[in-house]
Image (cartoon, rainbow, N blue to C red; front, side, top):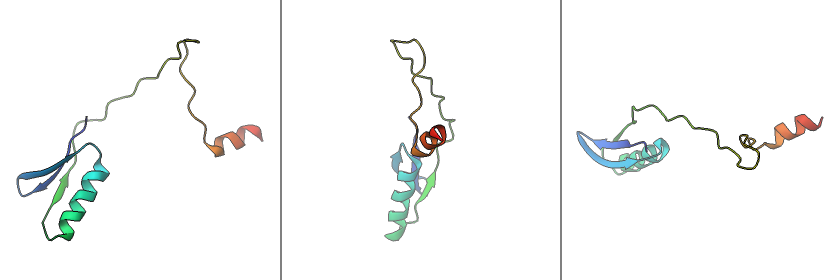
Length: 74
């Protein structure tokens, strides 16, 4: 799990798995007058593996958005 940090000086105030949550927390502290800043987690994101459908032995199809479905019908 990723660990983005919200810091004040060299002290950690908050750990977050999502960068947007850490940014929102830091903005709230800044509104209170606390000089908080975000340090993103430097580790690379893990690659996701395809889920295999046990009935067919093939990967599941990606969900289609409305735009993709309309292009295929036309």
